[in-house]
Amino acid sequence: MTLPNTSTARILIVGDVMLDRYWFGDVSRISPEAPVPVAKIERTEDRPGGAANVARNCAALGAKTALLSVVGADEPGQALAKLLAASGIDASLHEDASLNTTVKLRVVARQQQLIRIDFENAPDHEVLQAKLAEFEKRLSDCDVVILSDYGKGGLTHITEMIRLARAAGRPVLVDPKGDDYARYAGATVITPNRAELREVIGRWKNEAELVARAQTLRAELNLEALLLTRSEEGMTLFSADGETHEAAQAREVFDVSGAGDTVIATLAVMLASGATLADAMRLANRAAGIVVAKLGTAVATLDELKQLG
Image 1 (tube, rainbow, N blue to C red):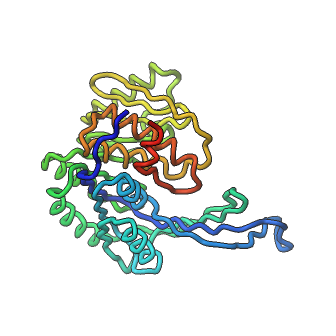
Image 2 (cartoon, rainbow, N blue to C red):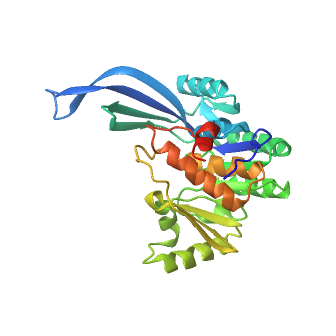
């Protein structure tokens, strides 16, 4: 499949950002204090996570990328700002002194994650209101909007954001969280994974039941499409025209963290570059196949997509 020219694509991302912090080391003994491994840390690495990883994926695909979010007035927030700037992302990070920037700390030894430790709390209302005003101003400078919901409180005004973006004629892609999908009504596409969709429509016994329930949800929410990511089963696009399925790319799966970020980022960039929804989904599926073969939150680049042919 020929890749569209992504250099003119303009993506605006709003959502919950976090810092993915990795401590890499080795384990050779068990602690004498408790029956737990002792990890001797040899190096550390910080990567943008959550909506920031979505932005990094958009930038890696050649798109002009803007990001709106909220961070704490702390070291992780500053680290995140530096990482985003280094990736060429126009990041507007509102600082909230009462907030701790969300950090996911992973201790990794011999390519295996030993433990993940999360640091987080919810932002306050005033900072979010300021973000809504900036969002409205920035709509004229983008082609596609991504709302990346990680359930951390950064998208309190998501219903209003969808309304404003649609009124401005901008497609809205949402990576959903939780069981209240009514707040995503009117979006263009939502991209749940199997576990997320199951929370909303319940378990399905077979493919026919999944199709019926997914299409009912899509119609109820007035969505153009629902893209279900299905891990080793690939992904399925549900639209008014029916269902389109893409099998998973046959690659060794190393780490699925951040794959959903790559999917929605690729979908947005390809749509902004003139691809059809079906073609954008196929390219998103390829990109997901690339990142699950990498450790931790990662990106798929344009060159990597081109090499797949």
